Image 1 (cartoon, chains in turn brown, blue):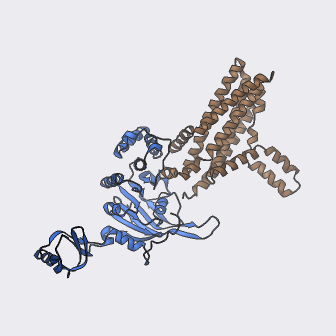
Image 2 (tube, rainbow over the protein chains, first blue to last red):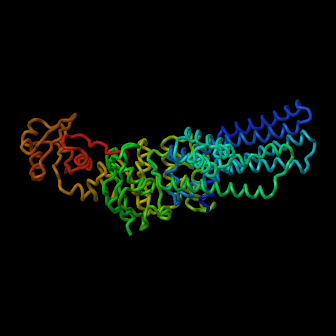
Length: 258
Length: 319
């Protein structure tokens, strides 16, 4: 446990010292600030527009951070051979992968918290006060974080097997497909061939359902998420992330570090 | 209990992603390293030295055979609690300072915060980096990186230390420091297993050596066992001898070379040394030195890693 914590803290430290992270956070703040301007010009729907844009900024920049730091997590350690040093210590390969995963999730959590603080600061400035319905965006942000946790799992999996460029392509592709699973299901039902129908149905079940975590529009209208949905989505994210990390470990356990 | 036991260890690499052809990087290697000895792994580039170290450090997996460290299989992470490792041409985390890096290494070894702090301070002092403790590693010279690499390998006070080409790329001062450190570790009763192609280092430091070529063991033992104690020839050096003084010695000499004011005569080992000396002195020659010439590790090494045509054996596969 101590070794996993060591790797997680080190990964967090490494991530927060990446310049790209600060650039992305600054851009996210600019986007949130732009929401304020947009809200001003859209008379009557200023709060909805601001919440929409603010949450989208948190989601998009969180995704970019998850992908671009996640894809190089293991690859960089292998390429620069810093991994030799880690694995020569009494560290199991599984501990290394789990530590890396939690390190990046921690980075994303801290970044999301900072962006959330910025978001609420601007919202408070815009409204003059915060009330109970303003908690709805917080739930949407929690879902974004769950979604990003899955993205980290996917990026980590690809990071152990391919170069960062390929990993980025694969991860982003899977993210897009994972947001279109509902369409995939409909397409499956309409497919003529039985084989294709089965394949599309299988894909819609097996692939990560990133779309399920999209809750920005209801949050912008102040609609709170039912408690049951928070629980099922959390469970889904935890189970799916466990599967992704386990698959990464299975591959990494057998990998020759040449 | 032996520090390292290797039995029939074999590693093949596939020649390409799609190819089924394989080439052995290590071929049924068996050897034992006893506790407390300094063991040198010698061989030309591509001999399989780094492959062997990677197998022992479970960075790669064997095609066949087995290896254990201090009685535990190398695949057992617990075996690694008592070892230290310095990779060849090490590269460490740019964003960390030397202290942060050693703290991380110690944490991975299971040391608590106080022990990490104390040990990191001691080791940085020992490798001469105490004044650079807070400097980011990206500002370190190659020699400094090598020294911090040695410090991290010693964080857990290991019983067995693996060093992959520890003198590689170091200036004479750096090499001297690493040599002294290895000797110091031997005095502490540690086992040091290091690979090198710098033969004088091996001659100076090693209790025993193994010579690898093309993944196969070409020789194993102490230098005395490998090179033998017998004298190959005798070298007599004279100070500016006259032709008259040299003439009676020619019957003993198999070769003669003049360098500046000195003449070096190579004499067959079967000669009676007393008779040679008496002849030289009676002819009026001034003797600078008289030395027995034994087979050097370099001679032995070259004889075992070159093919009959005198070419270095080709590299069998990736290191």
